[in-house]
Amino acid sequence: MRRAYSYSRRSALERCTRQYFYDYYATNKKCGLPEDRKRQVQSVKSMSGCALLAGSILHRFARLHMDPSRNLPPSWITQTALRSFDNAIEFARDPRGRAHRLQERFPPEELVELSYEDLDGEDAAARARQKLIRALSALLEGSAVAELLCDLSGFAIHPEKRLSKLKLADWCIGGQIDVLALREGEARIIDWKLGGVEHEADSLQLYTYGWFAENVHHVPRGGVSGQRVFLGDNVVEEPQVVTDDLASVGRARLFQDIELMEELHEYGRQGREEVFRPCNQDGICNRCKYRAICHDAPLRACSNATFVSLPVPQGA
Image 1 (cartoon, rainbow, N blue to C red):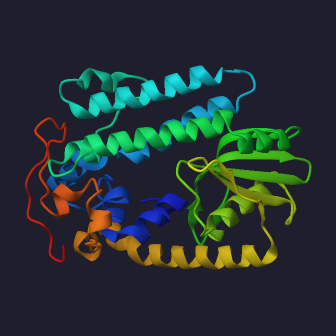
Image 2 (cartoon, rainbow, N blue to C red):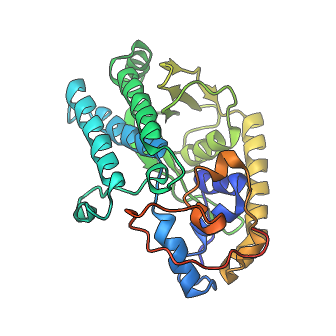
């Protein structure tokens, strides 16, 4: 079973170790979890959420907007993005009745808020749609983003650049940069955010992306900078340069994360579900797709999930 590290994987581990196990181990064919339990996890694993749906659509159309060969009108991007969101919500309301849509190029997903009986999915969908509208407006019409894109003229733009050729302590380091802009001796990293301003910056993510730019694209230390774009508030933060100090902090955190993942890896491979304890935090559990497994939360009858009731493991 491959040892793989990514920022999203690390975030899942911080959020809830049980969710981490279900996401990255439980359904692997080499995992020792009983097959009926694997099927139970698999039946809900593909679910997403309304905010994640909005974020995914935003990133997809941001990529199109950054492609100079397409020159797509902002009105077309907005209308098409919102239509994609609305169509996904329609599917999530009745996934069994619209199962034919699973054959589409971008197949829709069931959504947690519309799949669990005790959640107000319509309200969550409306809030996510409004966030998407605000973000698209800032991306396509906002002066802050327009100024940023003007600053990037002369750079080679690589939207959704996947990390590669990075390894630490036998763990392959993966991930995806929203926008990597390169020119001789310089790299700029852009991270699109659907929501409003967050004041806590994460040195680990910037370090990892900077490491990639240095190692793969041979950009010297000090020539890499990153900035987040909070489209919900139409704010582009000041660039943060990957200095020696920031790199030291980021690398130390990366080692710490991998050390913990290594300790858990064998338990995950064996399928030792009870080792990965659920967080039991309402703010996380109430929006988790695995609630039906950990907390016997009721799924709606229209769900595609072929759910089989099994005993909740000890420690849940």
